[in-house]
Image (cartoon, rainbow, N blue to C red):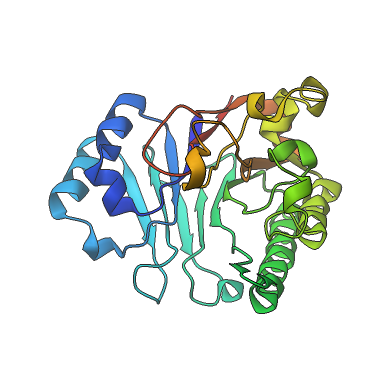
Length: 268
């Protein structure tokens, strides 16, 4: 089973630039989209029909604020259950949960700390940390009930210095603040596994030049993507109990259509 997660930075623009052609070519079992920036009724009916004709069962969840945030999960097998939103997302359209029999999938667009001219926005950093903590509590509750979990999405945090090309220059930038990295580390300490790093261990990249390391997001400025000056902030984490069923994980870094690349995990 292949699960692809992709921050498309606007689903209508993504569709306009061939997103559904890409979907028809790749046909993942599940596609998790983040930052859709649209409500379900803003998607053209012809595009809805094409998604259905490809065999997908879509679930859309948008923010209360127009043109902001939003997530969607497209599954080829109808989920047993779909849950949209959580109290701790504050109406920002960040969480869809789908049940797939042997595992539960969280599709999440984690908050950005928002970088201002004078530094990270304290209010958004506080919200981001609150979101991280509340989500982990919810995951642990589900895990305590015996559920196997996949957490897919744009986590908006680079975990280690190997996960961005310019760590020293960004130590005071949201997405790489020590408090954000510590919040992500709590997931690792609790027994959640970064599937890409599991198959591509850090030891492979120690001493490797930054522009030769794998990333999933690049700023649009200064030709960053062409020079591969990026960040790895999009992940599939799984609860460690599910890890024996994970067969591979990768980043499709050559795929255009967004400032993010799709990230992929394959399950037995």
